[in-house]
Picture 1 (cartoon, one colour):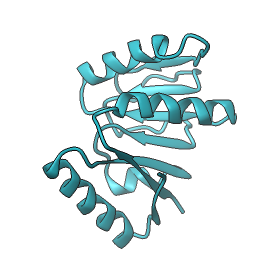
Picture 2 (tube, helix red, strand yellow):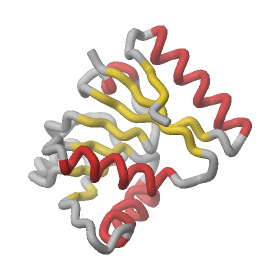
Picture 3 (cartoon, rainbow, N blue to C red):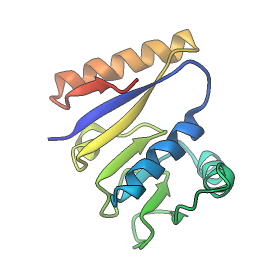
Length: 139
């Protein structure tokens, strides 16, 4: 059964937290899928993963569509069509409940710095709970 951890964001630092989570799970030998809302966000995150920490290297790939079969342990995509063999899902963009169920752990973001985004986060928390996805707060 998938669980969904919420990361509290007091300021817009989603990319940084995506990198921290991906690095943590990569170091634990787990494959990670990061779903972004659009191509632009994907390209920004792809560049950020190469430069965010000088002492860090995480093999990763930005893919287009489900036909790719990347070997990299961290995959960035704009779609929720394929899990690419990942154990961990990081939702920098929205994902349907049935897709989230493919993973042992999914991460979502509670964006507390904006009232509208905070309310949307609360609605997703309740949606996950009602769907049996066992949401929990990470920080």
